[in-house]
Image (cartoon, rainbow, N blue to C red; front, side, top):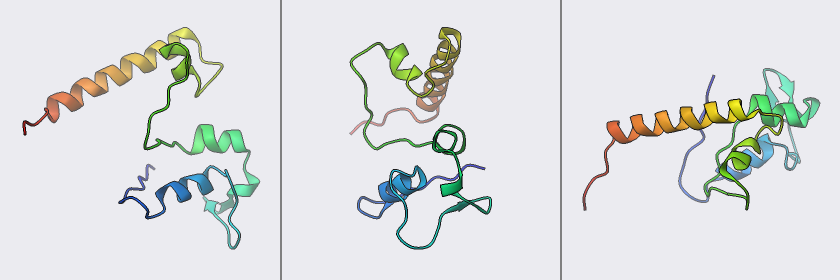
Length: 104
């Protein structure tokens, strides 16, 4: 199941994301995924397999694009990274075709 958290600036989206990623823990109550408190889950599994997070601002490290993509999975092979690059390029092409830029 995929859930998107969207809203205007200042309404807590980043705070929710930080809590879900356990960058810090809730001070009262608990956050559960499938009735399991996220404090009981391995942090790397939680971030790598359960949750995906897209920040408001993209961040690129001073290295190659391939290494920037590999940052999400340091054990990824070159072939796996190339599959990601191909998939993203194909997706972007579909989006641009479906929603072409509008003139002012």
